[in-house]
Image (cartoon, rainbow, N blue to C red; front, side, top):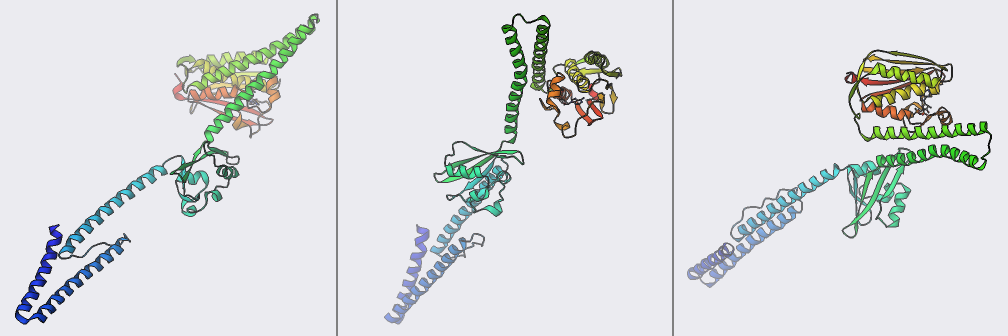
Length: 432
Ligand code: ADP
C-alpha cells in the first residue's frame, strides 16, 4: 500500500510545495502556473507509462515477441514489477502445459491403438500415427476434414449414422487380409473420439478355430454315417448271408479305425501344441528308430514299393515319441501317396546344420502352390485320394510341430510327375 501511495503523495506534495514557493515569491499567477505545469508534467508522465502498458499488453498477445517493460518511476515501478512477475508466472505455466501436452502426444503416439479426436461437427482435430496407419489418414493433410469423408469403408459410414456406439465395428479388408475394430467414444458431452485396433491376428485365430471345428465335424461325419448305415442294415436284415455280412463288418472296422486314427492324431497335435518344448529329453539311437519306422513302412507297403533305408549311427536327444511321430508320418506319406511299383528312399545322417532325416519318393509330386500350405491342419492336395489312403490330413501338421519343438524345421521339394522329398532337419545340439 505505502509502496504505491507514498511516491504519488510525495509527487503531489512536491508540486504543491514548488507552486507555494512561486506564489510566495512571485504572486498568485506564478503559483497557479507552476501548479498547473507540474500537474501537466505528472499527467503526461502517467499517460506515457499507460501507453507503455498498452504496448506491452499488445506485445504479450504475441508471445514470440520479447516482453521487457521499461524501467519506471514511482507507483508505476510497482505496477510494472507486478506485471513482470505475472507474465513470468504465465510463461512458466504455459511452458509446463506445453511440456505436458507434448508428453501426452508422445505417449499416445506410441500406442498400438489408433486415436482420432473429432470436434463437435465430426471434423478431425488430431490423430496419432496408429490411427493414420489403420484408417489411411494423414494428420497434416486431413486435419479439419470430415472423418466421414476420409474413412471410405461403407460400414463405417453406417456405423456413424446409427449413433449407437456401445459395440465396436469390425472392418475387414479381404484384399489386404486385415481386420480392424473401430469404436466411437463420446466424451465431454458433445465431443467424440474414434479408437481403432488391429484385430487381424485375433480374427485369423477365430477363423482357424471355426474351420478346425468344421473340419473335424466333417471328418467324423462321413465314417459315422457309413458305420450307422451298415449297423441299421445289419439290424434290419439279421439273416444276411455270411460273406455279405463279413464285407459290411470289414468296412465298419475300416471306418472305425479311421476315426480312431483321427482322434489319435488330434490328441497328438493338441499335446504338441500345448507347449513349446519337447515333453521330455531322453537319449536314444536315432538309427534304430529310423530302422523300426522302415519296418513299419514295409508292412504298410505290403511289398508294393521298393523301400530303401540308409542310416548313420547317431544318438539323438529329445522326446523319442514325438520324433518317431514326425519321421513315421513322412515315411507313411511317401508310401501312401506313391502308387504301387514306386520307390521310397529314406536317409538318416549328419548334415551341415546337424542331422537330417530325408524321405524321397517318385510318386505324383505336389504342385508348387500347395507346398506352403501342406502343414496346415486338414490341408490336402486331393481330399478323396488322401482319405482313400487312410490319411487324416493332420500328418504334416504333426511333423511341423514336433520338429519345431526340437528346434528343427521341415523342408519340402517336389515336382509334379517326378516325386517329392521331405527333409526334417534337427540342429547339431540334438546330437547326444
Ligand atoms: P494326409 O493324411 O492326407 O497324408 P498330411 O498332412 O500328411 O495328410 O499331408 C497333407 C497332404 O500333402 C496330403 O493330403 C497330400 O496331398 C500331400 N502329401 C504329403 N506327402 C506327400 C507325398 N510324399 N507325395 C505326394 N503328396 C504328398
